[in-house]
Amino acid sequence: MLRALSMRVGSAFLGLRIAVRTMTGVPTVSLPELRLLLASGRARLIDVRSREEAAAGTIPGALNIPVSELESALRMDPATFQALYLEEKPKLEDENLVFFCQMGKRGFQATQLAQGLGYIGARNYVGAYKEWSENDR
Image (cartoon, rainbow, N blue to C red; front, side, top):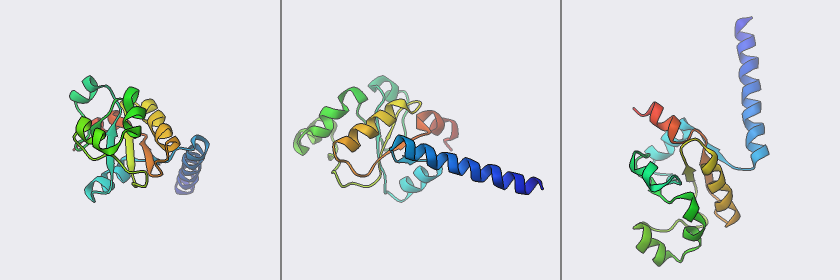
């Protein structure tokens, strides 16, 4: 009986998670999924926290573009982006362009912004740096 209750609660939680994804309209990535994407080299991470926050610690391989300058960065021509950020500018069709911040709000905003500019693979890491740092192994 306990197992059946557990399964129903799990199913309800899964349904809630799907509903939240649908309500927000922003594709997300979980910690286990992010770890798999990073291990396979299939994710591009953008840390949208301030430079000071990112300097104190970030997810390895993340590019720091503070949310306050993200729109102008994503609108730049590729050569200017490369000169300023020392990395290739993401392409509109890139898959798994993952944005994150400290707690989730700025990452959500960044993902919405990128989607609005046509970045079809924009996703928000909902656990944010807080979850990453608490589970970093």
